[in-house]
Image (spheres, rainbow, N blue to C red):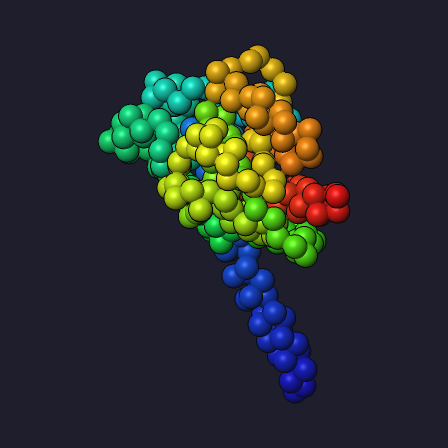
Length: 287
């Protein structure tokens, strides 16, 4: 009797087993994928809206739809919004709540006691931290490949940035005179653009403020103004319109970066690096 049919059947069977195992893994991932995700701060909103299926998102914060401060305002259109109150979240019955480590802490504490599944996001201090956070959120949402694609895009955009040959001394001035000090993601962004962070010389910690007098005498080659989009005036932004900074603007020693690009870790930080590198090249080329 010929053995050919037996060999053929065995070949088919061995080919089917890995496929079946792969299908089983996919099915398990689908079962574990959360179906009602609630995000509790802007940085969580940005990653959730970029990585999740739209049908998975039960609610985000009201900040996500503010085009002056959010990079995902378009994606947030039509998504229910809330302010991070416990009563808002409980009625949604989420199977995943994504929160920040430093915001809405009373609500987070209550949700923990009730037993809702929570993912708390810290504030990354460097690009590796950004990559880890993207990967963590993507995996929690059941979309690990999307996270890897986002990381690959971030790395590709960073690789295209050409830092200036001659590094300049830069000082970031944010609303209320806050700066970007060593040990923060903002500092990593500045260094990736080929700049030297003057705040390190001023001896401020990660969340330090810089008096205007110190900024004036720091003699930075480039002052990075962390400005929001045009809107209602605020006391926090008043410093950025001071005559001292106006004089630096006239000298071509400032560059403005929209606030929304600095606020949260994510793929948009590559754009900040690119803008700072371009401003550095322009400044080096000026007389």
